[in-house]
Length: 164
Image (cartoon, rainbow, N blue to C red; front, side, top):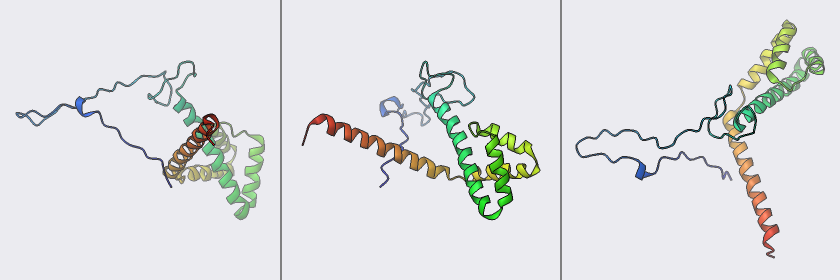
């Protein structure tokens, strides 16, 4: 059962101007002011946490997810190559032994510059990322976070309420 739901909130009705009898046209009201966070190459203005570093939490999470998705794409390509192209699989595994996957962009750039065979491996990795089911990922991640939070809260209440 999917308990996660995302709702678009509209401003309260007392903030929305009522149409006058003489004119039907109303001006848009934007009572919510956006907080501006520290500059970063990913523009996330929802939450700024002082002392968190050079980027908001969402930007840091996005960077880590980007690198993790590159890792997943490499693993998918390696598994596929193992069965239908053992030579390319061997080349990829040797490259993996020499290069870190901590930075996905750096890994792909190095792979593409290694040789023409490696360039085709890099393209396979790119296409794997393009075929990723992003909507399904978001749905599953939100579901997992909600289930985990519910379990943690339920366990905490049971531990602290002393109800038997």
